[in-house]
Image (tube, rainbow, N blue to C red; front, top):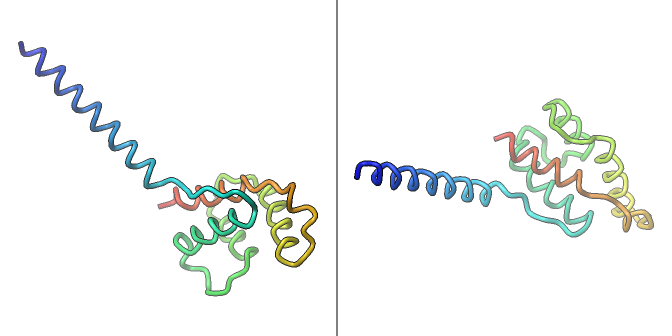
Length: 116
C-alpha cells in the first residue's frame, strides 16, 4: 500500500514540473513577427527592457555594439544584412526588403530576454 502513495507523490511531482515548464515557456516567449518591420519592433521592445543603460535616442549601431560586448549567441553577419535591409526599408530603397531574412533579429530579441 505504501508504494501507491509513492506513485501518487511521484506523479504529482512530475505534473508540477510540467506545469512549471509550460508556464515558464509561455512567459518567456518572444512575440512573433511576420516581416522585417515587425521583427525590429519586437527587438526594440526587448532592447528597451533589457538594455536600460543605452541613452534615449540610441542608434541601432550603438545597440549592436552593446549586444556584442555581452557576447550573445547571434549570427552577426546575418543580423547585419537584416539591419541593412531594414535601413533600406526605412529610407526608401525597399526592393531588397521582400527577400530579407529577419530570423536573426528575433534571435537577438530572444537572447536579450534570456539574459535576465
